[in-house]
Image (cartoon, rainbow, N blue to C red; front, top):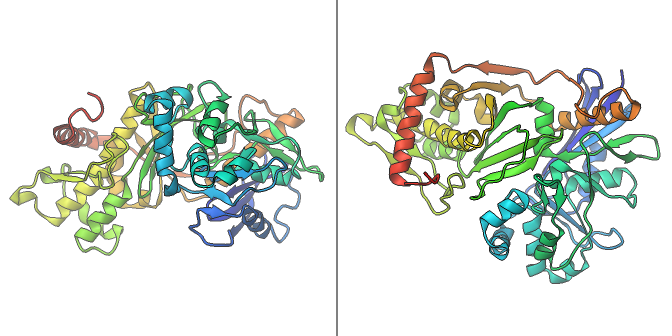
Length: 479
């Protein structure tokens, strides 16, 4: 038995879990908010270290033999030739870079060209778009930028005492917009296209590799991005998909190969185990529920959920296409939401409430079907986000998604994934674990929901939704 730690440095806080290397049992936990403005898009990376130090107080890391680091993915840390910070880190889905992202799409020849090059189309949150913004808006800072790191890369580098070797992992690298999960290689020409000149990039480590050892003898694993760490913490494998319910939504699944999509609907991430995590995102998920609750004068989503369950499958013919902020999947950036099927008998609050849940889940099923259509096997769907606890979501999701649905108990899955990676690297370094597979920790505790007898009704709702979508937006998915 040994002890390892996983730390997750998210956009707003640091969480640390200390775990048993053999079972993954959580022995101790720590938490601290990052100092400074919570929603800032320009951040001094030192605040991440201050937060880490506060979270680790009280002997939290006593006896720990290895640490894994997970961190926010939408981050860029520009450094000069001496390793000094050029300007505060650029973080979050920074809308300032939207024009820069669009410029990059055009500069390479369109969405198809980017999908073929690196498996994703530039978006405002990606480091490649932030580099373009830097070059266009702060040219002097861009000129001084000689090394480009992401938050997790920078934290690992700091923990190791700022060695000459800088590292990352394939999971985090796949989110940059200038590393291809398909080829496993950087595209330095895309960095030059964005920044105006070449810059040094961190070495990409394998899943079970160690980034190094601190002077005190503490092993630091490769680390990874939050999405990949959460997948590792959940214990995802082939046949597993995740549907995340935020204001917007996303669907990802474990797959054996990188997927490219000419239209750019699929973002081709690598995971933290050597597999791949194709992701399809939607612009609208829980925002459709909140908008409907406000329209009906309800104070909470729990009230909307209870009202929706008073209706029946198909919402008495009402169909809501929840494209309130335009839509990414399908690619309808200028679309608006549509409520269809209004008849005198359907004009009741409970039918509108249910149509909101059905519309949200059908839109996410559209995203899941993009992956299924490319040969991705989906046997189980993990449902994440606070809205996953709503009774209407749990009642409708299995039949509409067409799969067994698992709702994990709340836990620090990104930190747990980082700890599992640390245990893996430690075991490989000691010769007790194979580089081929991470340690077999107990999976997430989940509530299991089956489609059961509701599957046929769910398929009918899907058909009603699809027919309405095709009528309003014909050929939106290319068919």
